[in-house]
Structures are given as structure tokens and as C-alpha cells.
Image (tube, rainbow, N blue to C red; front, side):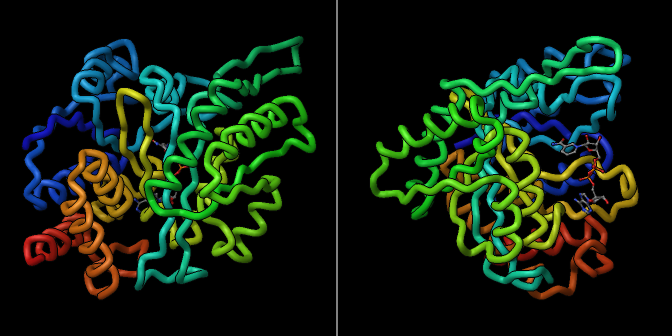
Amino acid sequence: MAYDVTLIPGDGIGPEVSTAAARVIDATGVEIHWHIHEAGAEVLNRYGTTLPESTLDSVLRTKVALKGPIATPIGKGFRSVNVSLRKHLDLYANFRPAKSIPGVKSRYENVDVIVIRENTEGLYSGLEHIVVPGVVESLRVITEKGSERIAHFAFETARKYGRKKVTAVHKANILKMSDGLFLDVVRMVARQYPDIEYEESIVDATAMKLVLDPSRFDVLVMENLFGDIISDLTSGLIGGLGLAPSANIGDNCAVFEAVHGSAPDIAGKGIANPTALILSGALMLRHLGETQAAEKVERAVQTVIGKGEVVTPDLGGSATTDKYTDALIREITAL
Ligand code: NAI
């Protein structure tokens, strides 16, 4: 069976890591027709927008996309393309697994947690205004509908991956109304999944507990900003941003991307670690039902990184992105 997938290379290291990811996925033998479309700062002058209609249309048509990172200016300037994409396509669930890779030096060897981040509301609703000069308000929107569907997604994920516990992460002691609503809804949904243990944890304490003992967590579900921060923390626990994959899932479309950004400091040098996007590609293969191919990719990553001979500088090696990708492809074709 052949699949149509939209490929958005992105900015900075995006083209380097997305080329690597597409090569590795192709090496599994799964037939993918890549539809390459642009988005980001570079296309603003040509299209008058950072997210061209043709790119959106392609994702709506193929229903699956692999996306490189896209830069967002800080403070002023255009709105994040990533946020726009998630809103336009209603990709409400952000799935961010963090699993230790043998051979990667990190604080722990046994991290295996999944962060589920609500992707469309919270403080990322983009609703900001000046109340009076010198006072700015950013609205943190939490809805019953948004909380209910992300809670279901978290419990369904726990079942699908054979997980035992879901932790709702919140700040309802201070944000009594918004996180109060979030918790009420998650509790209600939790009652529909008696086979999965349910607990709650305040976000600041969660950060501390994750650093001290990540094995006490399994699946964590939270609103947008908390999820953004906590999932970077869990990426750090497995050795850094170069290794952390993610999936943005909606009812109609799914966009797979690395947790990291466009890394302008190393862009164009050919030394970016493509593992995070490659593992996002493995999540994509699983989503397409190509489980064996996904496992091949994951095993190849574990073997090559485990040997430690051909790895990129962020992992202490001296291999280029291309050389590391070649090593993965050799491993996949030998499997
Ligand atoms: P970043 O993730 O791009 O970089 C942080 C640090 O990690 C840098 O030192 C970088 O060199 C390193 N790094 C990141 N990915 C790496 C990789 N694959 N291999 C080796 N080293 C890697 O975060 P930063 O600098 O805060 O953001 C840069 C831009 O990326 C910003 O414009 C930001 O808005 C955007 N961004 C985009 C995302 C997306 O498209 N989903 C996600 C996060 C940030």
C-alpha cells in the first residue's frame, strides 16, 4: 500500500533533519509519496502569509504530515505557524513520549513517560490585548469540550500503549476556575476508565518529582503551557531535544514533528541530530498502521546510538547528519 504524506521541511535545521527523516522512512520499504510544501518566515514575502493555503490544503488532503521546525519571532512579528497549524487543523492533542535510549548519557536510564499536552487553548489561544498603556492581558482559555477530549485522548493512549496510570497536572490551587474546570472534567472522564489508575499533581511539584524520580509517572495530561514546559523537561531527562519526537493529533489530520525548534545556531552546518524527527516519523508509521516499519526505525536508532560510533556532536560524537543517517539506513536494510 502507498501513502500520501505532506512534508513541510521548515526553517533552520528543518530541511537537513527532514531530508534525513524521509530517507530513513523510505529505507523501511513503506511506499510514501511525499508532497513537499512550504511554511515559515521564508515564504512570507512570496505568499503574503507564513502558512500558505496550498500547504494547509495538502495536509487536509493527505491527512498526515511530517514537519520540520519553524521559527517564530519573539515578542513582535507574525503569529507562530505551529500554533496556527494546530488551530486550523484542530490538532488538539500533542503526544510527546520520552523514553530512554541506551547509550545516551542522561540522568536516568529508565525514563518511559508520555506527556499529553492540550494543543489548542490555554495561554496559547493568542488572545492578548492592551488594557491600558503599561498593562497587557493574555487570556488563558480552558473549555469543558477541550478538557474532555484531551482527557479521553490521554486515557485512550494509556489503554493503547498498555499503560497503568494517568496523572492530571494542574495549578487549580491558584487558577481555581480554569484549572478547577479542567480537573472536574478529567475526573469525570477518569471514571469511565476504571482499568487505569488516576491521580492529580500540581505542576510545580510535578517538575520537581520528575527530576527526582521519573519512574513514578506514566501518562501525564495537562493544558497547553504546562505541557510545553513539562515535555521539554522530560526531553531533558532522556538526553535532550535532539531525541524527543512528537505527534499533533486531531480527529481528521495528524502532524508529526520533533519537540525541538529550528536551532539557528547550528543551521546549515550539517551537524543537527535528526533523531527526534526520525522518531516522529516512526510515530507516523505507527499511525499509518505500519508497526513493523516503525519498530525497524526505533531499533535502528537504538542500535546506532547504543554503539556510539556514528553519532552527532550533541551526543558527544563527530558524525554529520548525513553520516548518521547513512548508518541508520544500513542498520534498517540489514534488519
Ligand atoms: P531550539 O530547540 O531550536 O534550540 C535549543 C538548543 O538545542 C540549541 O542550542 C540548538 O542547537 C539545540 N538543538 C535543538 N535541536 C537540535 C538537534 N536536532 N540537534 C542538535 N541540537 C539541537 O530552541 P530555540 O533556540 O528556543 O528556538 C529556535 C526557534 O525555533 C524559535 O524561533 C522557536 O520559536 C522555534 N521553535 C519551533 C518549534 C516547532 O516548529 N515545533 C518548536 C520550538 C521552537
